[in-house]
Length: 224
Image 1 (cartoon, rainbow, N blue to C red):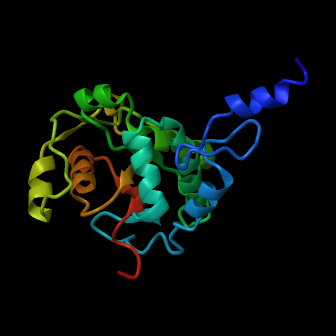
Image 2 (image 1 turned 180 degrees about the horizontal axis):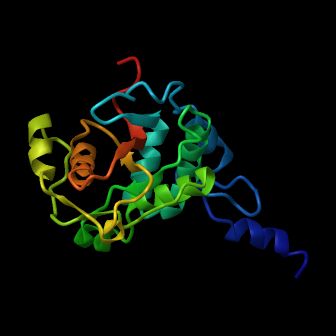
């Protein structure tokens, strides 16, 4: 049995969800060394480029290449385990920023219950949980509730995106009383900001201060 154990370990070792390979590490992390390295290269050197009113945004990476593939693999190929390394990377970047010591409460952008049931998880919530493991900030999963199902934002104009998410959110039961700390919203992708601004406006209408949004990826950064 001892002679067979190395072979069994190789056969049973989980494959990297990005490339399908194994790299021999035990226990195997979600990503192989090569994919993890390529993902690191997607990080934006200055994540606070969009940190300005009306909704300051902190983006970890550029929505392209390996990072775009990782988000798609997480959301559409049923690999929620990818949220852990991605959320940890966001958390480390946040801690190294000027905002790292600010007392906040993290609220993920919610999915509609029907869509979350179909997918099996809310990627923003999983990312937020891992982000909070690193930052030690409190997480409030029910700070916001998505009360209206919306069509996918992809392919819509800026105006159509704004109309699509209008009235989609309500303050959740966790905020029956306003939190003492400002809220840091968290989402996987930040594009035009229609969803995030609508979520922030919902909270602010109840007197809850929104500090900003932290996003895993944004297509708004880079040379193009």
